[in-house]
Length: 209
Image (cartoon, rainbow, N blue to C red; front, side, top):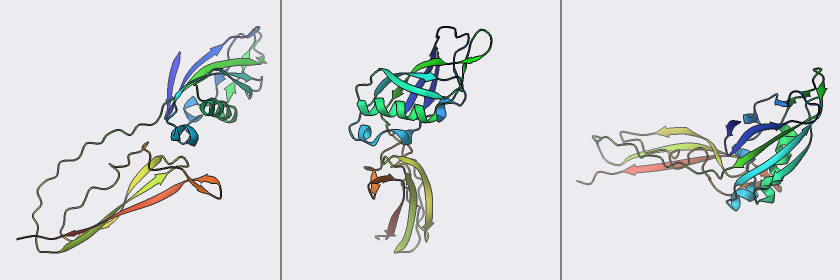
């Protein structure tokens, strides 16, 4: 049994033999590309749902998935339905073969483990003493978050900054690491949308004698 991690879900690849099948269907593309954290259903995220979905795929002689059935439920219809929908759309196989080497229909059985994303705590960096000069120093800094349709952070970048003799403040990336939840999904005309969010921090630093 091979275990493959794919962001918020884990696929365990295991095929089952069928009559007159000499070899089993084999993934033609990496199962790691079949799902990603952005595929986590918004409904399941909102309800903190997770669980294991057992499935069976019927693969035709051309390697295409003809049907998907849930063999064991996660307890969440949303996750069960999302699993089959994603696999039917993205899974591709090298077809099974009979004893003569001819392509035949086969069954690929496995399960997906949906794990609710957890933000890992980030350690605060040690700050070195800074020698200050003058008064009323003003500066700013920014970070840019990329947020997917489900409200999850997929990327954080340093934005522009400008400081006049003052220590740079911590950016926002430690507050919103990749995989953490920025907020609820955003809709545009009823459809989920991705976002880029610029967070700016303005500083006014005064010495007090």
